[in-house]
Length: 354
Length: 258
Image (cartoon, rainbow over all chains, first blue to last red; front, side, top):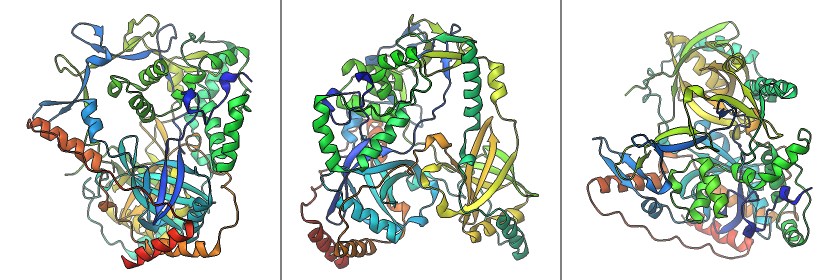
């Protein structure tokens, strides 16, 4: 395997070519600290259409000045907040960053609740938590107790310059986190104008209870969650690609999508969960020779695919990150104009910077 | 203030049909900035350009395509894309009812309130029956040319629908092994359990506030009035470094004293 396709987890100084944890910090309950790394449990939609020119070139989004019909440079862009009276209040990146919560690396579990009492309207995004310290003992202890007592821990914490409300769950010895919506982000039935609850007739309730009973199952079937549209799209694309119908070569600098990020995330998580000892030995091994490949799927990519993937290796890893995560990196590198950049622009700027 | 329904549909449970309306249960973000041109404070416009020539391309001229793994892009015309769309339908089909705990929270995406469209008797009867069943109904429907899967739940006497992510969008924990290590100490386990018990209560969502968003609003309002910015607060203390058993014991004492 070519070196470009290597995933490097530990060599921070290499920059760009690795999947980093989303966030690293400490869960504390009482005076016990559990160092953890946080990885996303959801990924962006795998299947997305691109906007193309009439010749099939993937297009880029640019800000422009309508009056002078020219593109606008990053440093000409400012953020404004429109007040109720129409007045625009300008706010700079520096001002916003000054308001960011302190970078406390702490998820302080001061409250545990019955896990089933959390209703899904609050759930925003899921993450896995892997132990990151020298010892996995505290992690395993917390997971074991939470699982046994069927409790979830609640806390607020700071990630990427923002404050999040989070619920920590344990399942099969693994901790996961779910960021929660704040109460004021949710509407109540009265807010949307639902009528007052009325006491139904017992006979009617019974009729519905019987109908529910008839459709009782113990679990969700994976097939119910399939993305039928994506399946139809992929089938059509495959058919056309095979025939070479309406198919154009991508210019070199345009990234090809790869499902490598999907596989890599899994691989990173697996390794991460194996605990500190293994990671340490990996770190010393990685400095010398190339490490084993993380298992990119080769089934569909021919030789041309391989070279395309090589060229865009670093880009692919950056593209796999969320916009917020890219922004955080841009912030670390102090890239000017970052607050107004699109995701693609952030990727480009980070590549230039690093 | 009543919100507008975003969609109307018919819940179908076997042969029973229940006309309903959907309302977003999420409040739009309060702090949302616009990007402006520095010199004249005009909101910016966006356009699509060919990245090679930087030539703008009119929206009407744009086409859609899907990049393949081997560095090519397959162009799809509008008729082909239309054919991929699901048949429009008003039906929200209930396919099964599973225990509340059977759906991993990672699947859940966005909540909607489901209100009655007409017949309120049946609506509240169904909501009550669903609540008493302790289950979540799995539903699928087509809304605005897209296929959705969701969980239908009884909440506060009403029906709530939470859309779910598709299979490829959630990383499955099934293939993951929990971290291993020496057997946990029984005494530590017991203390940890007592500590969790001591810290257990109800989930009180109103207790928590997005302080950052609140500070951004403060800043904006202060600037609008030409005032100075609010000051930053002090840092929090660092965690103590102790043996696990000691830490647990001390924490327990503190939790019990509280």
